[in-house]
Amino acid sequence: MSQLPLPSSTGNLVNTLTIWKSTIDPVIATQLITGNLISNVSLATGSNNINHLLGRIQVGWMIVDQQAAASIYRSKPFNKSTLTLTASAPATVSLWVF
Image 1 (cartoon, rainbow, N blue to C red):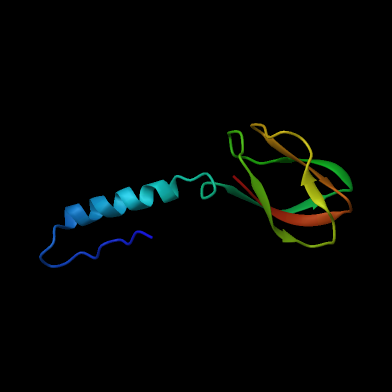
Image 2 (tube, helix red, strand yellow; image 1 turned 180 degrees about the horizontal axis):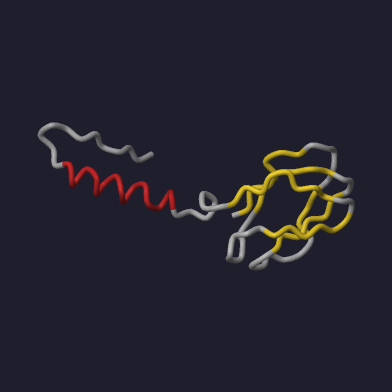
């Protein structure tokens, strides 16, 4: 694992910041990091369309909170505006879409 250098009183601060930027920028730019949290989505039994608000085709999603026992899965291909989930029972979930 790469470690960021600590600036020293004799070191070049600009060089240190350049190393930090080149190390951190790829992490910040990952699509997983630049996602959207959608809280307290009420899912009915069957198909549910959820506006993911990403403004682009998503690459994935995950349930970060689920408040009822239900099987939940994606039932249509990813697109630029909605995530279609099918639930086996009514449930309230929070989703991270990316």
